[in-house]
Image (cartoon, rainbow, N blue to C red):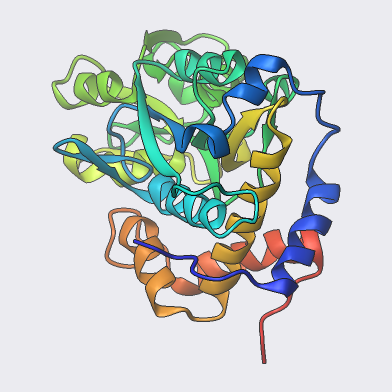
Length: 303
């Protein structure tokens, strides 16, 4: 789906202000990073971790999901950029087996971008985050009757995906639980589905999106999450041009949703909106997007 067709002067200004608001100073590009520019290769190499809704859904050899709605917008923005060369840039999925492997590929220059990544201060030290396009919280799928508080998890075995924000937050919040680590979201969901584990910790959006298919009788608890974090894309410190253009694309995508663009609303709502397994309302999604844009660039909805 082509969500960005033409450049918008007002939103170029939005991107510039947003970059000042949310980014640290970029490092000088290394020769390897310069030679692997998406403008030179014609490929936007995007990390894909498994097949976990709502961010990723694999259909045969192709991918969809909320992350790919965002990646499509970034690709489209690259292809209307004056930096683009003769050939349009295409998304090239880079499948990995774990979050650590995926982020290491970006740091090494073997991939360009990953979308659907929870914010953490540790990751921010070596990667640059774009504007966020979602918000997540750390919660638990638990048997009915368990409220998901630290006390209720003491003595329990809780499944988590290794090297995620959720795994570190839960480990520091629950004193006397045993954690079973899985390399990928798919492995963790399979263990929950076959009964190998009764408790699964993770990002709220991921847990809610997969709850009905994995553990329909479970409860998503506690009522208030252990922690909240934004969800965005990450690029290497050595690719500031990709960071800039990704922010512009995400800013345009969010503002189009707020301003009732039918095509954009349909693309996003398919994964997190009303009727999806996440089930957020248009107002909930639009309110978050407004906060992001108003914080970064004093954006307001068109009258």
